[in-house]
Length: 70
Image (cartoon, rainbow, N blue to C red):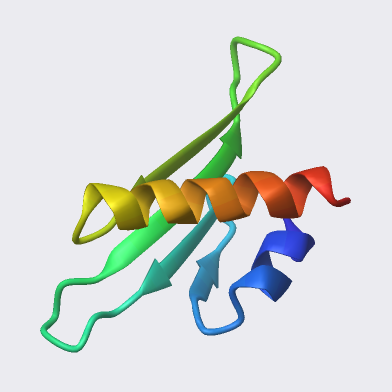
């Protein structure tokens, strides 16, 4: 999780439920990335919301690569 925080230093982190990183957009439309372990399966869920599907995918792909590098 620390690697993700270093990857996105401009985001506001919240570790309440996994790691959530928030960005506030200029027009008030922010985006976020949530990385958390499943409580019922041996997997990690990576979920993002952004203004476009491409940006959401980019956030998820960046998170995957940051976690694989550790």
